[in-house]
Image 1 (cartoon, rainbow, N blue to C red):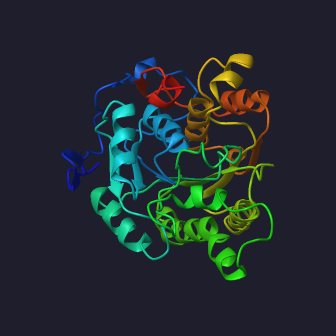
Image 2: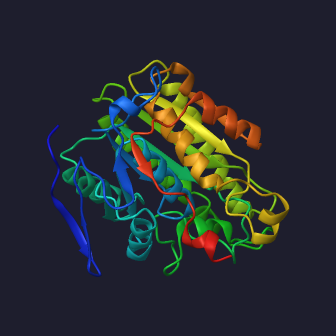
Length: 325
């Protein structure tokens, strides 16, 4: 495979230059002799793009794909989020951080920049949206790569922040209620044609539930992305691209008090990242379609059915936001 050793950008002293092979601190390669027989194929030499941001969910997806051996592209309009994500993951060389948005007006430039860094190689896309639906707006960590329509706020945070009643101006509502579907439509329109050129490719939506704490516009955004995912699953059924959706109705990044009452062995973001990497690495047609997660039993069942190929050894998934609470 041709190496992609191109310098993408340099932000605040952090150089974003990556290769399509090799792994940085915290990630060590595992010999193919150590891999289980008959398991999923490692993703070494493959490029996966995480669309949706560099927050909690983005970190989990990046970690799972890196563990599977993929070179991972992640974009964000926030330099700070990209720098923090890279530090959290041990500054791996196989992480390509792109400073840019996938909003419709910026998506083409961002895609061009990313494909230049990977020599136009792309095998998998993980597009996440609204997974942390349950978090009150004042506690939410921005997890969508876009700047919102107002100031420095994140687009997903903005979608969650509207009132629950009918107090908004209809024009303002129409602008905010379509932010996430428009973003993911732009991403799919630009990236799916590239995947169609690549055998064994996949496009996975990772979505959240329309929770009871959501504003009206947040629920409209969530259902809009669900509809987009459903339409593309049907449109690409039987094609060379495996289109799937993982819909998560469990709480991510729970408050410390709730974690104490109902402990998990490790953050749910880690399990979610690994099972999504397992879906991408699988050649089974069972990986396509809608996979709903509304209990830990569903997490474990999918995690076992689509195991993440352990191509790269990674550190324990205890990151700064768990330690801080």
